[in-house]
Length: 312
Length: 274
Image 1 (tube, chains in turn purple, red):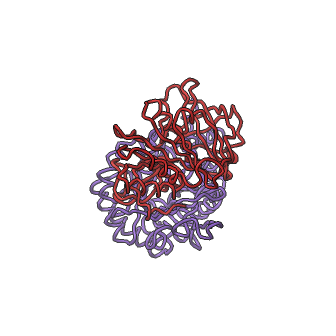
Image 2 (image 1 turned 180 degrees about the vertical axis):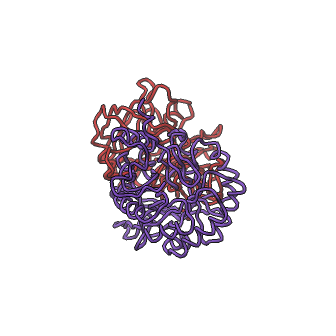
Image 3 (image 1 turned 90 degrees about the vertical axis):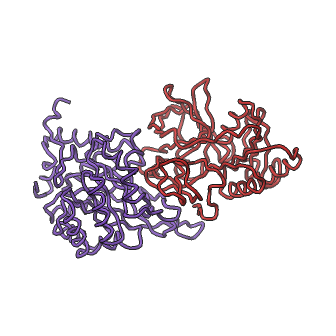
């Protein structure tokens, strides 16, 4: 495509320049290697790793997954290798990838986040961090931290002191006013916010007369939550002056384009990776094609239609 | 593993609620191996959303086609049963590990329960081709759920039904157990099982009591099927050899460390099965 040069697909988040606006969402793409045979990772603007906690976590009991109409519930419980094994087993592969890798950090309390980030800054520096303050599937921390604006600002501020790399705060939709939380992250010094994480949901096995998931409730993802994510991105992008990373239910290029029009500067493909591993690739091409057909020269150009302020 | 567009060649009712689907296998790929599985989309829409996993039940080198046997029991498999020859399937394959061959001098005992018959048929055929004299025990609810296959002439096959409508009246394991009572006591065996959780648990325990190595093909609800999501785990006693195991000593991914596990390794009490 000769016209490609007319569209600058790059996106800046903090001091990182992503080659395009399309990333893959934390928890749906492992640590990258799992998908290397199915997708050319270098085509991605960003890769958000499976959440990493300070110590390894076994995760929740099974069943951890159940399909729902147009979506799925998960209750993985942040099963992960912990920061030290992340450094020895996952980092060597991730550092060699030709995309911006953001480590998704999770924890139970402020100290965990700080200690994890300090360890990674020192030993396993990558493009930046996405801070998961919104996991609905762990007992303390995660969503509990992410629903209180004061806590969000505090955590962000403490992490900000410890890194110059991009800091993206991932927001929960399970709050009364997501824009208030986004403002708190911005006040704490975040370079961007990503929204949304999964919605709390439930499914009941009517034969066994009990919840299907061992943890009773789980996080809903997939196309069922697309409209919720779009509304959240739209609202948040009206009130913050930092980039918004949009995710939730992107299955097709059109869905990604909707997020960009709603005000997102970047997007993440999540559950769709399970359904069709080529989705991110198709979304990258679809956005480019749309930009060319509509005479849009940059990602910011997508923001002019719905009244989004240009923030760069 | 590959994401493949494969042409459906045959999709027929095998018996009862079981169907058999045969599709072209790419010339550039090595044939699937017994134990391995695939996932496929049952439609192009978002309901049902997730891909469905199925074990390979055979490979036909002469026409270069692979097959699965599946049970029509939900929305996804109902859609699947309605696909006609010529349809293009969106397939991820081959996935997972394989059934190890038995140690020399051990006769392979294959315990197939219900829809678990697919991979057992595939393995039985390969064992027979290598002259390893497998014994296939096929258990099902009733005679309607028992197919008629040329394989049964090639491999010694015992049939058990819960309602006694065909063959042995009782479980496949009871059938196997009573058959072996009449066998020479010095004969050595290795057990392979695929079927309902209860059957594999009982089979594993039966084998352990007799000092027989057992292998089970586990099932769990899957998300990605490539090792990324940590959704399809089962409780295990020790890590698999694979370095990829992310939680030594407690969970293993069915899609990656499995689906075939040593029966001894599975924590049958801790593994809640949906």
